Image (cartoon, rainbow, N blue to C red; front, side, top):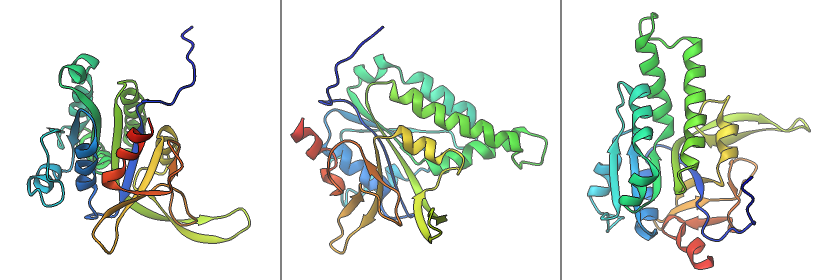
Length: 238
């Protein structure tokens, strides 16, 4: 047995940050990396990180960001191989304290597209392919949580019609991830944050759920924060 005393100080976090397309998920990764200790490795699925951050319009210092592009054609094998190459030794040697996946909504589609291309249905994924993809994503998050570093996943947002037990119906925003695993993914994360940009142009992360927005914060008591303060508050408290 490996018994541990409960102590939240400096424990790595796992976060899922989502928002509509173009709201600034790649920029948010850069803002978090800029304020974090050590380096941030971005596993770039949708090819937006380098183009967005190279402009240095919002994120001024990109020196602590490393980018690894994920094969978005032969994705199933490529994604697996990339995760195998990221060993604890690799993370330590490169002083990587955070690994971000940008973004998991596109990763999901790439995995399905690759599996469909390997099948016999003219590129259309079979029912079993959806299960392969779902298990791959959930198991990937579990695997990454064992690295002992901070994990950030980004996703696009989607809306669904939700019915409350009392019969009330309303629209709810949540991460655009397969409906069969979205609760599992969110449950494995310490933070689920909804991203938006306020009237002053600040990237804001909602950390507390509302009736219409899925979110949670198991790290501290904040209900929202600016993206560039996402890490600072936690480190000041530590």
